[in-house]
Image (cartoon, rainbow, N blue to C red):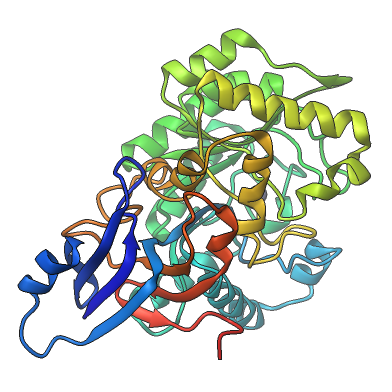
Length: 396
Ligand SMILES: [Zn+2]
């Protein structure tokens, strides 16, 4: 298949190719570049899809989703009322919704009974439509801790290591640890409170590294962020720098995050404009200010929505990215956060996140130029995941 377009964005570091093309063989990109050069490599009889007024670019990556949650007002109650078969059906629909919004890869940071791992396998085999799913399996939490209802309650180093090994054996591609509390868990530790000791965190990271898997740490509290950084996690989720009485960004920890090349996923809700209404104007301004400070300091930020939690639907990544535009980041960096940088953080930068020979054919066709107008990311004409074309919702 040959896709031609008015403009091709191959990756975050290169300029747009005007009048470009992408040649695809099955699930893989064979050639990308100026149309005449790529056309010359296409075998006779190759199917051609022409989008002369559109842009072709890498598919988007949402680095933080929960396919098990329904994004309604009480995701935990809904989850607890669904058996695994029903839940897996829900998850399949949510995955399709993500794909229809231009997301060709997600990292699922916490499921129940390894359902996201099963879904990942069925999407990879072509049995279900959806983005590539990098699944954490069961998130690691102490008894009664954040998201205990997902089944990952462990106490002490031995149990932590055992749960990590269980996730590895089930096919997880990342290990998720709930290092601090979280708002979703009623009656659990406060959002800023740490849940694991440095020794426990170190054991978890060690066990994950033995299996060659990265660690993603849910960390709201400043103490928890500092502990996770020292333990050697690969990504920090949320990273809101909360304390018992407000917010405190520690400059020494920030410097360590940058020096250790840790990616931070601030999990911006698609409805981020409601933040002042939800948290109050002052705390909301403080939270936004902390993301700006991280961005300006040069932290490697990646895009994620926490899809599945309250108000975070499975079609919201592009709305979420507008937050960074509001923050003053340029479009190139924002797109990179949702493509190449996210792929790097997920350990799949050799497969997706950019368009090049040998890469998976994960790409979008959008009207307009996302480098000058981020809103054009929602003017989707087509989505291709591993070379399979998916019709975006609402284009029929
Ligand atoms: Zn989450």
